[in-house]
Amino acid sequence: MRKFIALSVVFVLFACFGATEILAQAAEETSSGGFQMLKEKFIEGDWKFMSTVLVCLILGLAFCIERIITLNIATANTDKLLGRIDERLADGDLEGAKEVARSTPGPAASVLHEGLRNASGGPDAVEKAIVSYGSVQMGLLEKGLVWISLFIAIAPMLGFMGTVIGMIKAFDRIEAVGDLSPSVVAGGIKVALLTTVFGLIVAIILQIFYNYIVNKIDGIVNRMEDASIGLVDVMAKNGIFK
Image (cartoon, rainbow, N blue to C red; front, side, top):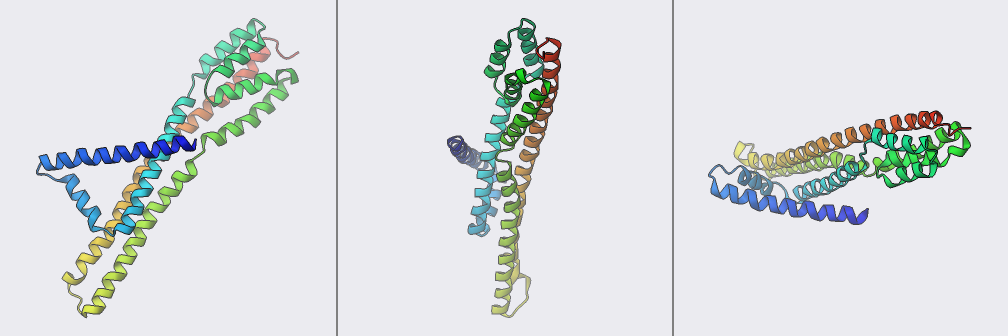
């Protein structure tokens, strides 16, 4: 998993650098320098805080990409899976049903396999195994979300910190010059506010990905619960519990 996250980080870095080159070329070809303006504003901000905000974006996107890929792999057609298990159980082939669940990727199939393994203990044992193993699979699905939440919270905080420090520097300049004219403080205040803007942009981007991932997890969990209930019914229908 660590190797996968590292590869994701590298992928995001290459994507960011590649996108930077493409956007830079587009900005040179067109006089409307939207990307050029964004790059200039980034440079105008305090590099110490702007760099940390950029790191939050890169790491946050790496975790988001890893979760999205993992959840897409974990998504399985539970109705089709239950149908195949039902066919094996109808033929009295419990081992074949276990093999079907074992060979199918995804948390739903793992939970069903755990239930089939405890078929000899009766419906209570099956339900207990499903609940216990379902909690384990739920934890695996939510793995990494805490880091995404952390970057969502840290990015605007770093931006606010840069703004506060920039405002302090602006007031120090006022004190040194002894004049409150707009030309003295406008530049410092503008630079200070840029860190907040970029921090909020990063938080918004990561929040969109976070909500998508949470919605994806909820869908997988709902299908997993439906499949678990269906498994008990299928096993009872085929006389597995004796």
